[in-house]
Length: 217
Image (tube, rainbow, N blue to C red; front, side, top):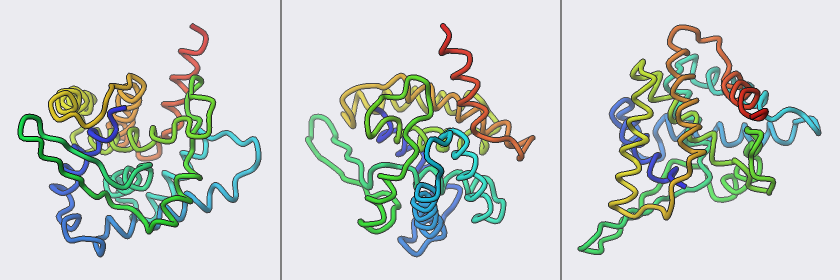
């Protein structure tokens, strides 16, 4: 999967757009990430058995928007970090064999584990039928939505995805490319761009439309 490399691009953009992300765990982004981690846990505890997980994405997005005082870009970047199922990622530089491990904004260890257990894992008709499922896809979706919202381009998130593939190949961040991650990036980028014109649009629309148009093929 390429989400570890993809998030490095998101980290760079977030630092440029929100300088306080470089100031450590006291930053607003960190606080929002922690608050949304707790919200994910609470939503999971409150959900009705058999409920549609795709509709739960809308609830989480609206909760993030409220938390961030309707600042959409802040909500999207906070959701990206809150939905990440890992706390660090590793970069290995070829030839000189230097390795860096970067920490990602996250809640404390116990909250992080509980949040990961509570993440929505069934967003596609072909989501893996196991405990993890598609828990990594929301971070992809909201990260690409952040880039789409930021730039107003449906193509920019796709360009980032191509750069990530090159990055991964050169720096060996992960072992393989996941085309379903790339699929999610495309959907997220389009959602982010539409948010600029229609802030009332829901993310579930993109997952539902994809499922309806592809599951019958």
